[in-house]
Image 1 (cartoon, protein in one colour):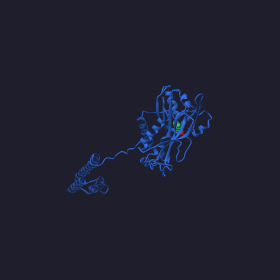
Image 2 (cartoon, rainbow, N blue to C red):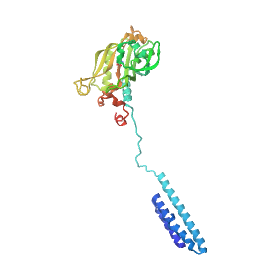
Image 3 (cartoon, rainbow, N blue to C red):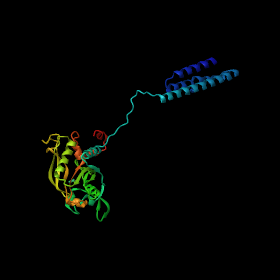
Length: 342
Ligand code: PHE
């Protein structure tokens, strides 16, 4: 009986040492110490023994059981510890997902850099603006039909006697007056104002919130050639050396004369293709700053003159060769699989 017990114990210990997993250890525990385990059944035999043997065998069984329990526990612990400390330096690391700047931010950065090279400085003016800056000071008095072009969102706030109602800036031209005020009647001004604009509009080429960038140059002797040279420079920098700009007569109340600006299509060199249709892409307005606007900004139109242009940032940027996006709304979707490609 005693020898049998010793054998069982040694067998169990050998099995524990050879076990390769926690599951195997558990099976060994059941085989020896479980309800019908090999050692457990030995206990049942005790009552058949003689009194003096009972004591000895009882002690032996207890000892075997606690030794096995302890060995099982130690082995289990060593498994979990080696799993924790196991470190394979050859496994390639997990790279954290890296994002990138949104297309509109890329556009603003690139446009800013192009203008900075010729002495412009980027400025920022309020998105929530007074009617006065957005219209009145830009030579568009209350009730003037020209205002209809800018389908404006008005904010429900008390009106100011001088500045009028509060609006969501419908164009970056409001920044022209703010910039003139900033220099306190003392140009030069070489401003590039990139900001969010809001209009009540929504279709494939319009979204209610978009970005414009506005250039304003005011100094002595500024003329249309300076404007045209700036447009050509910008086109060549953004679209490539083959870019050509064109100005067509137009009408804005805050510039005189006024123009619409086109860039020749870089896909077909102006021949006309499915992308441009006419050979040209219209990007937005421009013109020589109206004397009334200079006056509203506190600048003497007898001494100074200037030019301004204001274009949709998304529109200008999406015309870049290689992008070929014609539905502006896609840029504002929160579809990461799409945005990651831009
Ligand atoms: N603010 C005009 C627009 O939103 C564009 C423009 C800016 C025109 C500056 C002329 C001069 O359409």
